[in-house]
Image (cartoon, rainbow, N blue to C red; front, side, top):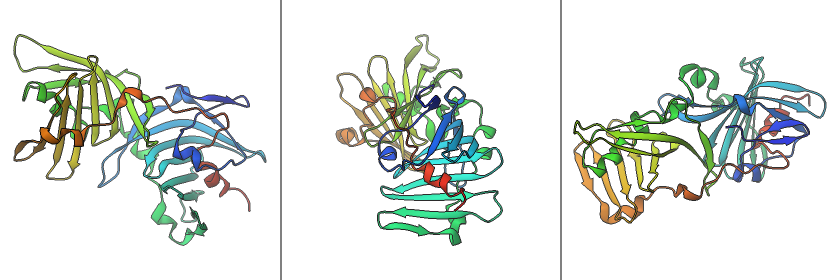
Length: 313
């Protein structure tokens, strides 16, 4: 998990892709404790949990102001969201809502005096009067405080399971397993500048037969509803929730080396074979994904603009 660069003696880390393309070169020097970083799950009601990359950090401005706290990074439709909470309780947040549209939020003490600015291709818009609409998730109470270890993101439950797709190999076998609790989680970048979290994993068929089958490989989580497992042989298994809620519809995909791919819709009424159109549901090709590119000049997904909101005008 210790991915970073040295900038002026400070250890820094940054995401690549659209986040970097829209970031501002503001006069802040970052210092990330990447060795203390964690991958946790942020819970929100009524929505599902989402992976959050949690890093102890501090930022120092060119005028000598230093902010120390925890930086929480998550993916967003426009790139990445970045929420920085200081040790004194101030919150700085940037959300990349759409490409070119970034919301900047600053709340000095959660006392209703929040400032909010929307950056657009047409200029900045002051939305402080409705700042509460853009208040970020309280990561301090919804992530590490309510989870057990970084691998909560990969637990085999809810929409985050892969065992349904594994069952396609034996048409209903009872597969259990997943990553070891001490397995290292690695962030990878997709061509769309999103993040995929990967972790070594092992699954075992426990149907009660004498012959026990185990598959070892890597599990990849794009979201709570989009999970992929690739075994060492290169076989691909994917389980994606297409319709969440009370009536869940999951897509189960299995593509062994050499094919042909199998695809089923898993519903409360049973499985529907849609293998003839399996290519429509082929998961992300993870074979060529790489760790986030490291930038010589750190740009932190627009967070610096949010930090500037707390400086004297």
